[in-house]
Length: 153
Image 1 (cartoon, rainbow, N blue to C red):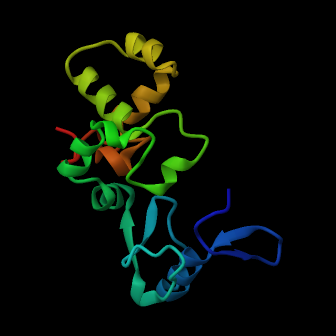
Image 2: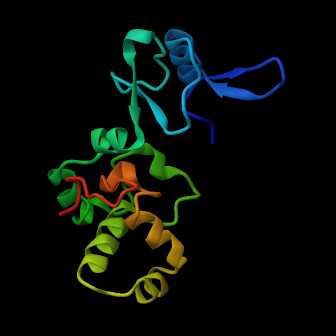
């Protein structure tokens, strides 16, 4: 699957996202690994500096978190096999957004990670990663500090 971002091939043969290079040149410094470059107009191939903004992972996650209406839609029969974010079409994803919502709600209700992991046929560490903001934070709004955004109530 091709990347949705433009890549630049460096002299050493490695590839780098063009939008990160544009922002680094503008800032005259390297970006930190936890700094995200957001495309203001949501076009990942529009790398004009006026279309780019730097933010933290948590800020970027909150910005792209689906609305309450989106979350409700995920529980309708029409949502089966569909996603709000095109990145979920990636074959590496083991969970859908609806499953992540369900997992967060189950953990909050006191169910064990072991039982949930068995039911969803996933590793327990993935549940822990979700709840600690290391995975799916763009969707849940949960930061690495464990603070919950407004995405899932």
